[in-house]
Image (cartoon, rainbow, N blue to C red; front, top):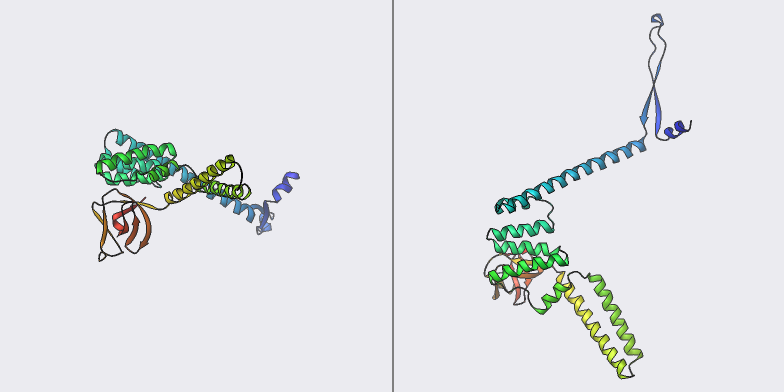
Length: 281
């Protein structure tokens, strides 16, 4: 009875009466009892079926991706870089590994500018130890193209802060700032040791603020110049005067977009260039 009461929560019995046969034939009236799923159970069953189908499709897609990666790797080892690039390009969605290997294929095929663009895309999603390898490839390509990349002090600090989340840098800056404010307000007069400690605290506060600024700058949208000798205009039209010229593979920061133009910022100049001259990374 317990099992029956348990099943009654999920099933209901529908009785369909069958018309009696002629008594002359000696037949009796019979009833057919059919078990039918209740509406909540039907809904749950549909959910299970949908989840099973989605999981199966995901597994098939994962197997397809792994197969494409394996085939592309085999073609790359066999120096068939064109076929390897085609296979990598067909993989969706693309991740760090795909962008990086597409850059390697383009470099082997002689398309160094496109390789730099793909490596920049890979670098945006890489871990610190992976960024070192990708940055080395970018530096080699920029030397080959005679491009003035980002090699200054700020660029080196930006690479050092790649692994640091912006949130925790902001928390550290606020903590240092409040500590500095409290210390100066309470111990504005005292021994030389207090003055030394206060000076160190001020330096740490300023350094943490600079780290926040650099990290915020690194999170801005970036791009790579794809054509040689791209003119940078003072406004979003070729009628404006030229403020600078950028070589292919130059990394830039995207500031604003307006129709078919985008405003970029480079360490040598800033201005407007046609959107088709830039690849967003």
